[in-house]
Image (cartoon, rainbow, N blue to C red; front, side, top):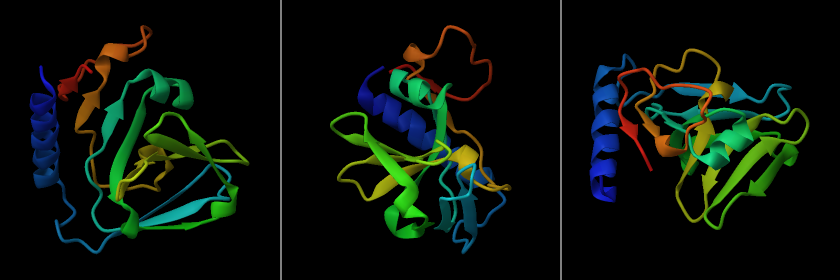
Length: 155
């Protein structure tokens, strides 16, 4: 499977989930979340993009399992407690933000992009969305299986 095929699968899966969600497409919904100790709190304005579950080695090592996040426009995010966010640059292109007090992994930030990822587990419920794809499944841990019908993108 080449890169374009993978992108097409992911886009189609996200659109299918978007079409099935109960939150209106042009929703003015606000989604809130925080780290475990609530020192970092955030708010996202507008509908959440369906998340993906990343099984790459970096996401597994940082989160302790696979990492599920939604992509949001930076302009849709407001954050309180930014002085307690520690950023770790895990590669040339990505840095990851976590609470320096409780250690909660919160943000996945692609440098030089107008989008960033937010950990789905950090959102207050309900989120009105569902996982749309498993990505980098070639790197998944050997201690679990992926047994759902959600599209899987190997690398």
